[in-house]
Length: 450
Image (cartoon, rainbow, N blue to C red; front, side, top):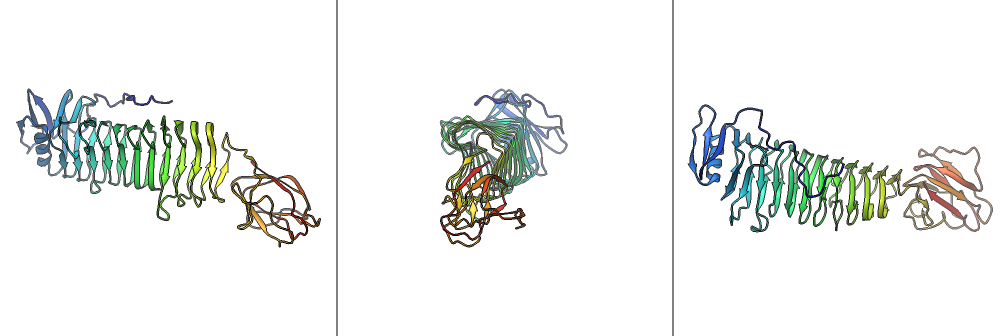
């Protein structure tokens, strides 16, 4: 089921009270003053102040061994300066959308909340910047030292740079609404789960992965950004599954690139729904994008390609069992003779490919450079079937001396006796065909990729 772009998805966390351990401090507003009420032995109340930053920061500073700071609902905690969270084990907890941490008017705050302490938890809160007024201001930053953290059931939005900038490992980012910034979500770490969020309204990129790996990005809705819905630079060992991407009027649904060897490998992109995409649904933009699987996705109303590898060398990928509906182009493979492209509705069966022979590397592939195996007098050579199964027909050579044999991937011969011609023979991907040593004009070969 698709979610409407830009519409909050009424998350179940709205106005939900925490049913876990009681708060160490409760921050309440009394008239024009904010007060930190101590709820645990050994803690003292925080002196009332008109600036909520002072009260919340003091509560944090008192919790040297960690604890929970609860922000009451129906209250605007308008910050004059940012909060710095360095103690480990701090939880910020609220009462849903009405527990509102905002950027004070005309306050140019680099980060509303800046976290360096481990085991931080931010939940059931609303964090709201002022996008139009303050350039260079961000929402919640999780620095690389703050591993093992959670951001749950919250609204993070309307910030200038990033709503959530997360650079620490072992994160759980779940059931949030993250929207309206240059980059609503930046993630540059590993070993984390990002699930069931609604992310979008990015002036540039909706989701920005940088040097990220071993992630599960599952069950999210990513919508309406100025550029890419999901941009990944150097992403590996990551699962991107069961998400909805769209609409996006200009750029790609998923754009993955990388520079260093082994830095764009072993990703799985599966069971996603792409719709109303302005360029390509999925684009691999670097030669090191290898050993990835793209399967069981639906690409619908896509202006460009459903899937495209832009750079030759992006190889050993599996593009299988996707459904392409009303795409400007379907699937484009630059090079990639070891890439498997099968079972894609709207693309397979591919049909006749004229120049499918790579006579240098001895391949039969989608992006070959010749229509036949070679000139007369060539020695026996095995051509490997690449990309997809084929139906193949071949005439005899001009010298009437072809000796055609089929081999499996381990070079075991299939035919009891060689043939001079073949007619619509099915040859699976990975199998090999040898025309033998022939003379005269080369045979006429017709290849249909299935």
